[in-house]
Length: 246
Ligand SMILES: [Zn+2]
Image (tube, rainbow, N blue to C red; front, side, top):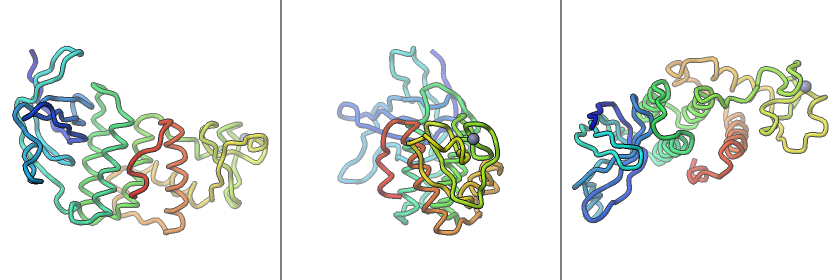
């Protein structure tokens, strides 16, 4: 029986029997885990009684064999990001980030830089960040950290140059932007402007701490959002619930 201590962000919680909850955390030291919180009933008449969704905690859990649930032994709330709870755009963006992390990660697959990315992004959105820009930056960094960033610097087919002065093609199945030659014959693709390509490349090359106050013109925000939804749905092979709210 191992006692494991780690910073953790709550991704999901579900009731378990009458008085307990099963909490899904993304932890800094163990990746995504599930733990049974005994005796922590979810709520009484809407008043939260357990560990809230979208909180940063320090937890201690008892690690069990893979077939049984971990047991939450201790938890201390460090930040509930209260500044983003009164603003629906910020709140939905934050919930979307939790959904992305839940969908993109496997249990017990440690990735400390990803934990730091989640925490920094939630802090930035709660503070003075633009939720749309922060979310786009988060998606680009998540894809980079997990090895899914599409090829945006050259043609994904022949590795040759792409003329970004004109609209280019982007194909999820081909893994990135395509030159005029490789574009022929590819049916599954969307159009992308040079401005969107440059913005994604700029974000991918920056540390997350440097993208917080970055601005993106609104027409590019719309185009990049559409492109990322197209690409993420291809990678995950599903649609995410929060897409219609962000
Ligand atoms: Zn090519």
